[in-house]
Image (cartoon, rainbow, N blue to C red; front, side, top):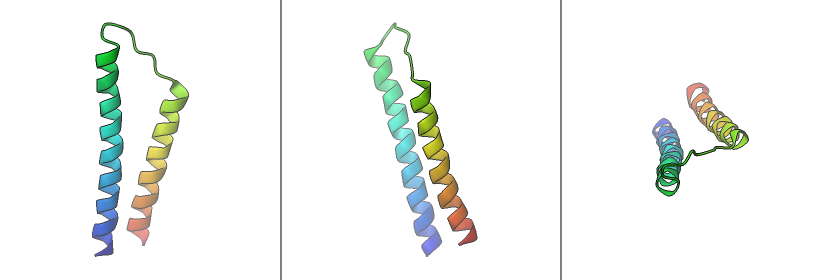
Length: 65
């Protein structure tokens, strides 16, 4: 039962992060139509570092726990 809850939390967090990222790209495309969009590399690397840490910690805890 605990494994189901852990994987459910992981799925909801990952899907929420991807939904927010997709909405940001979509809204950026609407606002900056026909313009070149510039993204800050530091913010993108921080986002994916947090994404990796979160998914790695939840997966490792559910695998070994």
